Amino acid sequence: MNAPIIDPLQGDFPEVIEEYLEHGVIKCVAFNHRGSLLAAGCADGGCVIFDFETRGIAKEIRDIDCSAAITSVSWSKYGHRLLVSAADKSLTLWDVSTGEKIARTILQQTPLQARLNPGLTSPSLCLACPLSSAPMIVDFDIDCTTLLPVAVPEMPDVLAPPQRSKCPESNPPFSPAAACFNKCGDLVYIGNSKGEILVIDYKSVRVLALVPVSGAAPVKNIVFSRNGQYLLTNSHDRTIRIYENLLPAKNVLKSLEDLGKNIDGIDGVEKLKTVGSKCLTLFREFQDSVTKMHWKAPCFSGDGEWVVGGSACKGEHKIYIWDRAGHLVKILEGPKEALIDLAWHPVHPIIVSVSLAGLVYIWAKDYTENWSAFAPDFKELEENEEYVEREDEFDLIPETEKVKVLDVNEDEEVDIETVEKDAFSDSDTSVEELRYLPAEPIPDTNDQQDNLVESIKLVEGQISASPASEEAVQNGHGADHVLSPQGEELGDTRGKRKRKPSEKAMELQAEKAKPSKGSGRTVRAKSRAGIDQEIDDSVNDADDDDDDASYY
Image (cartoon, rainbow, N blue to C red; front, side, top):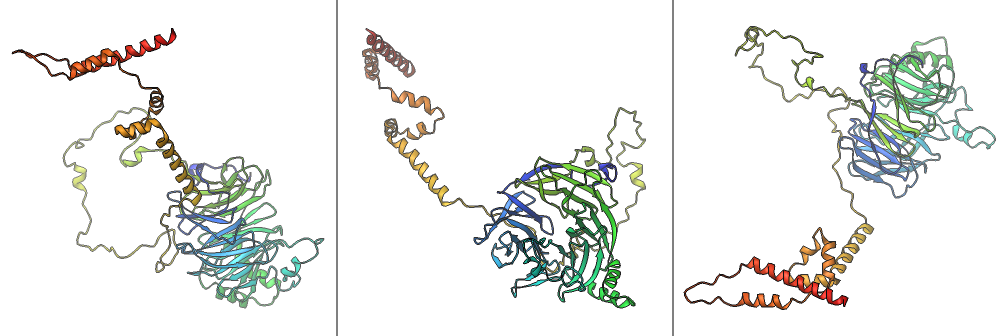
């Protein structure tokens, strides 16, 4: 490893698998801006949105025209729209609240990744990275696509990726390029197959700066941190690199134009490299010097303090976590399933990873219970200690409290209208952000309802056809027999023929029915319980006589 593992207690990052989510075969995941909703694309062409607080399904989105696997999902800045790319070369824009399809377009190539513009309130502009074509800007409003350059203008043979993709099969295919927006959505950063990072103004389709990557290895992934201060690249040389963004947060285009005007004496590629050196500077490199493994879906933590990358080796589910200083702080080992995607929660120390089997594993911090934390003055002791009480410890008003003087202005007005800015949110408070979705129960299908009705009718028919049930209904005890937990025993007794009472039992019944007679004295009659007991005994005797007679 590039550094020994430091004490894990120093950082707030996930440690164990807390639980997992399952809904078909999930291929990709993405959190919304707050981390309250998790969108997951499935292999059957559907997209499900989980309420991450309750871990339940909040909404299921499905396009009847799409049955191919989902390749990526992307949220808008305020969470009202969701962009879904699929393996059938389609891009679909959805309204999350209503579940309605806003727009849909078909590309010439399969989009491996698509991202909405983070600088627009209701974005209809997205950046797509196709499988065998250059990255492109897709505008749903005018149904137009614009190819972006993947090299500097001095190399026209690389500037026409569509023609290059139509070359004969003997030639090597076009290597897909990685691309992403900056935080404000003004610029597009593209990592090409020549190991270069291009800074492009997508509106004028101009290359404004060029940053060469050490080793000149093709770039597979490129992503910004949440605050926009750092840029991450994942290259084919099995190295993750972190660049520090030197451009200001606002008026980025004007700053780049000023940098280009202040550079004299050089032109062309060298000028673009000079401007690029003032845009990005290499901050740190991460790699596994022992196994030299490839990395899958690397990204930043929500606060940008940690860098995470998944192992691309088959048959293992490992997640590596580094701090920005370059130290490896944790290796998370999951089930024996390959990892295909992962995402870090925007606010909490939680990671969700997608396995090849289609399960979403939720990694969280392993918190230990510390009951003394609820009492600030409480101290846990390793062993017994002698305690000497203070002189005023048990006084009604201790001397230490008398010395304290409350420096509080009770006449000062409290401001209850001003809303403090959320530390984890950079959204404009004037726009309402979609944080949660109302729960919508999924109705049963018609087949399930028909099967339920048929089973109920079958049970009712069996009960009504039973002769014992007819007798029970006449006596008013039908429901009691049906709902009895000892139904099997009752069913056995109902199947036997009814015995005729013996002569002794009939005499006892007649004696019970006669009115009591006496001259001056009352005749004490037998109690009802005693007579009933004698009747039962006589019935049993008669049954025994019948059984004995059957043997002769």
